[in-house]
Image 1: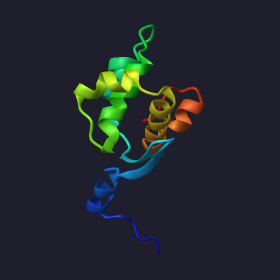
Image 2 (image 1 turned 180 degrees about the vertical axis):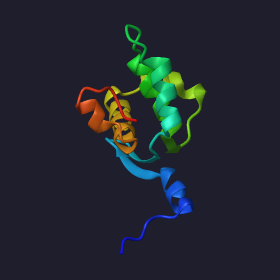
Image 3 (image 1 turned 45 degrees about the horizontal axis):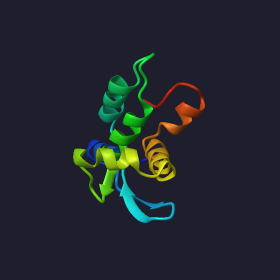
Length: 112
């Protein structure tokens, strides 16, 4: 007999737990996947056809999903001026944790 999740367990598991991520050449940080509302908000703000702003979307996703160390809006310029390889690696991991990687690879532009 199949045991299904309770409503409480199902909803509790929708919230992404933190995941350790080794930043190339830097050390460990903790990331979480974006919520569905965060994904839609980022897409609405930064992925309007003809006005795509991928850099800003990557930076904002890092601000939202970086659990440790926690960054604020005051750190946006430092992220923009920092290593592209590290920022892209973190952003790619957030995409994976958020379940958007399969849709991106299939040309559908993200998950949900």
